[in-house]
Image (cartoon, rainbow, N blue to C red; front, top):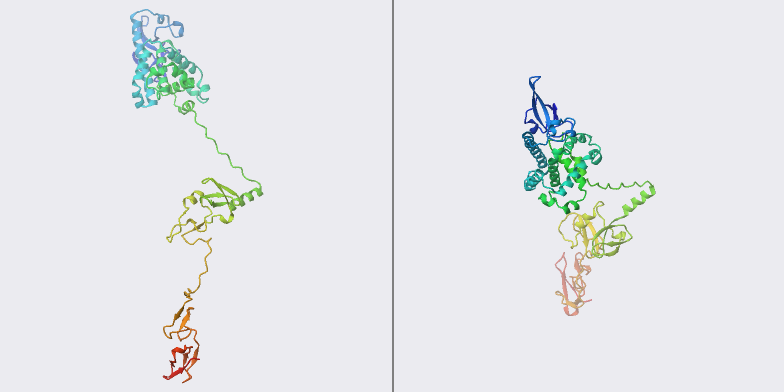
Length: 447
C-alpha cells in the first residue's frame, strides 16, 4: 500500500514522503478499511533500492483488499511484538485527542473534577476487564452510528455524514475495539457528569435502565464529542446537535385579536368604553374598574356594591387602575399643597380628584350671613347714659341719643342745626342738647 489516510491532516500521504513515526503522530489509517497502518521498507534486489510502503497490523488477510498474506501471521515473533507496542502508542495518542475534545465541551474545571473517572475509563479500555453493561453501550453506540445522521438528527447534515464516515469505519475494526470502549466511557461521562462523578456509579444497571432516551443521548453526545475532535473535518455549527439533545420549547403564539367589522358592534364597544370607569367600593373604599349600573363584586372585601353613574370617579381619563389605587388617600384633607390625586371625603363618603386638597365638591356649602348677628339677650339691661331699662335687640338703648334709629329734630333756638331727641324716663327729669350752630340750651321734657 503506497498511500495512507491521515486523521489529523485529512488527506492521503505517500509512503515515500512519510517518516517512520509519522503514522502515530498523524494517526494514519488504511484508505480502504480505515484500520491502523504503519510504515515499512523493503530492499529490492532487481532495482537495487528500497521500496517504501504502508502495512496493516497483524489480522485477517481477508478483512481488507489491501492486506497481504504476510500480514496475517499471529505468531510470537519479534515483529508482532513490536507491532503491538506501536499499536498501543497509536491508541494512547487517540485517547489523548478524545480527552482534549471532552475538555473543550465540559470545561477545564469539570474536567479536573472528573480526573478519577477518566483514569478508570483508560484502565477499563486498556485491560481486558469484562463489563456486560459497557459491552451493551458499545453495541448501542455503533448501531446508532449505523443510521445516517441525516435521518436521525437533521436532514441538512449531509456534510457531517460524509465527515463522520472515516472515524465511524475505524471504530468498527478489530484493532479499534479499545478506542470504541474508551469513547463509550467518555460519552457516558458526558451524559451523566452532572449527577455522578465516578464511572463505577454510572456503569450500574439501575442507572442505565432508568435513564430516558438513552439511545438518543448516546448518538447526540458521541457526535458532539467527535465533531469537536481532530478526527472529523467539519466546519458546521453544533446548534443542530444541541437542539437534537435538548429540543427548544415552542412558545405559544398569542391569539390575534379579531377586528370588529360590524359598525354597530364598533359603536357599542365605543359607548361601553366611554361609560365605563373607576368606582370605589362602599365597603372597603377599594377602587375598581367597572361598567355603570351593575352590581360589582369587590375582590378585596368579597362583597357587592352598585356602580351608580353618579358615583363614578372623575379626573384623568387615562388614569390606570394601579395608579388610582396607589394614589388613593383615605385621610382627611389638609391645607398642604399636594400633587394631583384621588381624595376620599369621610363626611360624604365620596372620592374626588383635585390638584390640591380642597373642599369636597359633593358637599352642600351652608349659606353664610353677610354680618354676624349679635347675641340677643331676653333679660333687661340698664343704659349707662340714661339709666333706662331695655331689652337688647342689637341697636342700642331706644330711649337716648345712642340709639342709631332715634330721629333727627331741628334746633328750636336757631332752626338750623339738627339734634337727636328721644323719650326720656320721668325719673330722669329734663335733659339738654346743644345745637351745632348755637350755644343755646334746649330744654325738653317727657312727651
